[in-house]
Structures are given as structure tokens and as C-alpha cells.
Image 1 (tube, protein in one colour):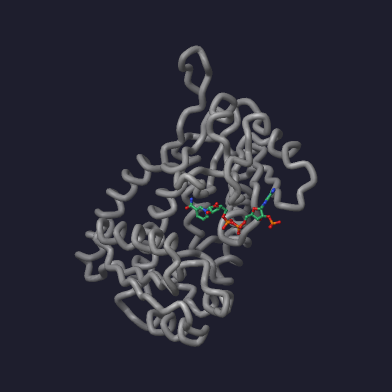
Image 2 (tube, rainbow, N blue to C red):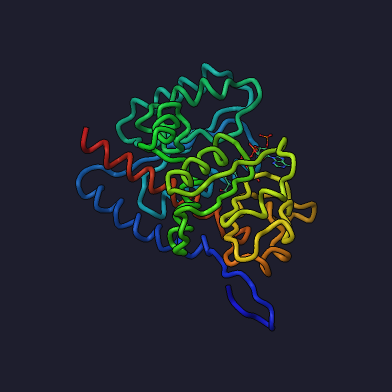
Length: 291
Ligand code: NDP
């Protein structure tokens, strides 16, 4: 906590700064792998023209280029069928220059998302969504960990947050954020509660949290009165307001005077997600050397 203008305010968990440090390290690691004859490679499949997805994919591809990671951007028309997407995945599964494959979600309605994710080779599944990687995480022997919760764990470790025995509350139970987040916190010996849209008294749970992770997709839903004094608050949410500005799932202004640490939006979890994608791609390339 910091004191400012007579008010106690939370310290910022600065994902932008940490991700820049990590990305410099990953650039060196990519160069070292390339020198050993394996330039790490990531393929991103984007189906359709969703503007938000296009921005996310562009950011990922640019991050790869800056890190010296080869990247391939595969664009498919919005009206393709499941078989066409799977054919693209299988082509990339066979391509030795590609170590990581990411299918940008959400996919258009007509496509069977589970079938597509199942088609990605578990060895190239840098998003950690394949059932083999989900199972490995649940069994406590993780292989590829989903990038967003992995980035949250890096942020917490960097801030020196002690999770051992801590009350951790995760709001949201999606397969890509909430559930793996809960698994990782549990593996770090936190006592974990997972809340969702059917939770009866959300504030009762959030007020008990030493570490609160919000992954809801509802602007500013967690307000300062729902937060325990001194809590560490991680805001995964990215919401666009009618005025075009981005905001998280946490009301930053009312929460920063209660929490001890808080992530901003933007500049918190988002940049860490991209950094962890690079980390997983490097890991996949390293493992390919061992095969
Ligand atoms: P989903 O929509 O898949 O999941 C949202 C979760 O929030 C669900 O489990 C839902 O419960 C729960 N929820 C919804 N309403 C309430 C409520 N009123 N009270 C309690 N829980 C509620 O979203 P994601 O997990 O994919 O993403 C969450 C947010 O994180 C989004 O804003 C997204 O944009 C952002 N995001 C950010 C990333 C980053 O890099 N920073 C990466 C990925 C996502 P139920 O299961 O019952 O429906």
C-alpha cells in the first residue's frame, strides 16, 4: 500500500512493465534456440473478421516478431466449416517450423470449437486448451498452462504475494480463465473459492478474499465495498465502454483505496497474457529439440 494525498492507495501490479522485462528475456532465449537451429514458430488461426479478435491477433503476431519468433497468421473466411478449420490445424501440426498453434476464440457459431481445439497437437497447444493439457493441470503436473492465468501467477510471484494458506476467490469459471486460475492457486496452496453467475451472495465471498481474481466480463462489477482491506486484486476483465474506453471488471477508483495491490486495465493482465504466449511457444520449441 502507498500513501498519497493522505489516502492509502493500492500499489499497482504493473503487467506492462513486467511483461516488457520478460519479453526482453524471451528475445534472448529465442535467439539462443535459433542459434541451435530451431527458430521458435507460432501459428495463429483467425476465422472471420471480428474486429476485437483482429486486434488481439495482430498484437500476438507483432509480439512474436519483436521477440525473434517466426509467426504465421492464417486467415480463414467467416463462413468456413469445421472440417476446413481442422484441415488447417492438421497442416500446422505437421509443419516442423511451427511449434505453437493458437486458434483465436471465439469461433463463428457454425464451427465445433471443441473439435477444433481437440485437433491441435497437445505438443503444440500453447494455449493449454487441449483436453490432455487441461487434464495435466488438474492432476498437478502441468504441461502447457493457459496464458492468462499463467500471467496472473507471474504477476503475483513478482509482487511477492504469499499464497500459502491464503483465501483466494476467483469470480468466473470459464475454461480459459476461471477454472485454470483456480487450479493454479490451489496448486500454490491457497484455499480457493470459485464464484459464478449462480453464486448466491457474491460480496460475502469476495469480502473474505486475501487474493481476489475477477474474470467476469462485466464492467466495474467488483466495487471497493466488496473487497477486504489489504486484499490483492487482480482484474482480468477487458470491457469496452460506450465511449470507446477500456475498463476491467473491477471498479478501480473505489477499490484502490481498499486493496494493497491492484492490476490496472489496460496495463495489467493483458500484456502478461501475450508474454506467456511467447513463453509457451519457447517451451514448445525447447521440447521439440528433446524429441
Ligand atoms: P466468460 O464469459 O467465458 O466467463 C465469464 C464468467 O463470469 C462465467 O463463469 C460467468 O458465470 C461469470 N459471471 C457472469 N456474470 C456473473 C455475475 N453477475 N456474478 C458472478 N459471476 C458472473 O468470460 P472469460 O472467462 O472468457 O473472460 C472474462 C473476462 O476476461 C472478459 O472480460 C474477457 O474479455 C477477459 N479476458 C481477458 C484476457 C486478458 O488477457 N486480460 C484474456 C481472456 C479474457 P457462469 O459460468 O455461471 O455463466
